[in-house]
Length: 147
Image (tube, rainbow, N blue to C red; front, side, top):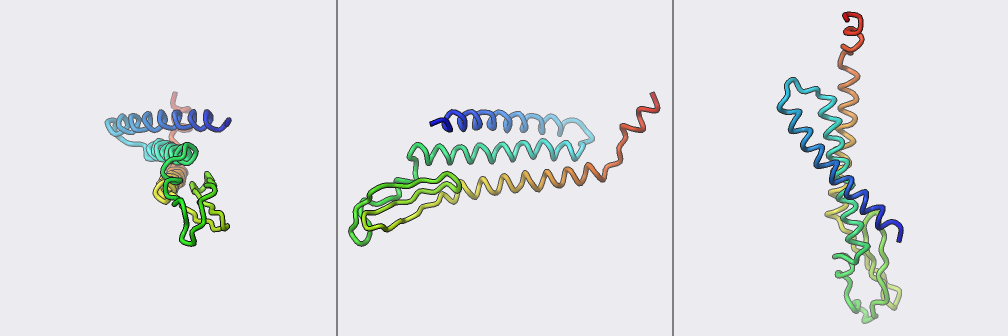
């Protein structure tokens, strides 16, 4: 499967980006004054890469037969045997398919909620940083003429 190395690489890059973002925010806090658009940009990287890490973790959980297939019972209420589990990767879900045609879906809400929350925060920060950047008067044009 080609996606396993690709998502593994994405997960490692996202982890490194999140760690670098934390260090960058810590360094920015020590230097005053804080340029708010730049802080928002670094926080967008932090929350966006954290969302990617959470999604990759959930994807690997589903792919490697993590906690979702363990929720399937060997027999359903009508006594039909479990024939297979069907898995989808977005949203991260697992379905137990029984011999009588019944399907019971299990959705990993904790991982999906975490991904949605982190990605939503990243989007809100990106918009706030862009708006703040547009409202901040540009000082770079004025400094060119003073050289």
